[in-house]
Structures are given as C-alpha cells and as structure tokens.
Image 1: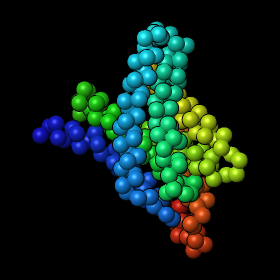
Image 2 (image 1 turned 45 degrees about the vertical axis):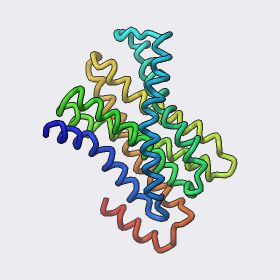
Image 3 (image 1 turned 90 degrees about the vertical axis):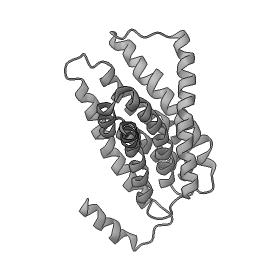
Length: 239
C-alpha cells in the first residue's frame, strides 16, 4: 500500500501540470493521443540524458567542492544535457506535426515532453528517497521543470510562427538551460550560506515569466475570436 501511495504522489504533479496546460490551450486544443505521445517522448528523453551523461562521465570529473566546476556541472553537464534531450523531441518531431498550428502549441508540447521526463525522474527519486523526497519534489523540482518547458515552448512557438525568426529555436534551448542551470547550481553548492534561496528565486521568477508567456501566446492564437477578449480579461482579474 505504501508503494502505491508513493507512486501516486510521484505521478500527481506531472499529470496535474499537464492537465493545467491542456486547459490553458483555450482556442484549439491538441489531440489527447498526440499529447500522450509527447509525454512518452519525455520518458524517452530520460534515456537520451542518461546515455549522454554516461559518455561525458568517461571524460569529465567534477570537484564537488569547487564553485567553478559545479557551475560547469549545473549549466552544461546537467541543464544543457537534460534540456537538449527534451528539445530534440519537441523540435525534431512534434514541431513538424500539422497539429502544431499556433504559437501556444510550442508551450503545450514542450510541457508534455518535460512532464514525461520529470515524472519518470520523480518516480525514481521518490522510490529512492521516500515520502519526504516525493512531497518536496512535488512543490519544487517538477514545477521547475514545467517552467523551463514553458519558456522553451514560448520561443519555439515564436520560431515557427514569426516570419524569419527560426533562430528563436536557439533561444528556446538557451533560456531553458539558463534557468535550469541557475536552479541546479544553487542546490549543488548548498554549503554556501543562503545560496539555496537562489533556487527558490529562480523558481519564482520562472513561474512569473511562464504565466506571462502563456498569456502572450494565448492572445497570439490565430483561432482566437474577438469575443474571447472579455472572457480572458475576466479570468485574469479572478487569477
């Protein structure tokens, strides 16, 4: 019974965030089957991450007491590898799908892939660390992965639908890596007094930017009706 409860807690945040983003797609929602495929791509991206990380580990060692080497660890070995592993599925496969037909879809598919990644990662951490780990990650690591994904998806949406702006795909990978790296770095060097608060700050800023990104792409939808303005303004006031 304990194992089932632990599994449910590990699965809950990724599923909840996926449903939240699905409901935020107000104008032309994506096929559920395709979203499930995106989630599975996220699970596969964990395999890609492990493969790349193992290769890097053959050639690179990190001194855990070095601030500079931990920066390399956080931003390049962890953040860049993980975000790249997710990015290749969104940009390489889902980006080309005919259902990716409005800017907000960049956010939707990026989040679904990221939640597949974060959910598998969360299950592994939960069964290794127990209930306390699962509950802590519910409010920290999984939402953090979601914010990285929203920011990535925001720029992928711009890359596809803004004329001659395909270079925004590089912005997508870069901004996700930057926020991911900043979040992880503050945790990796937690022996520095007060620096753990930097991870919290990174998460808070990421959530704030994610809400703005979601709103911008909702308003940019070509499927948006003029009558939607009143409804979305009302929702904004309530939120």
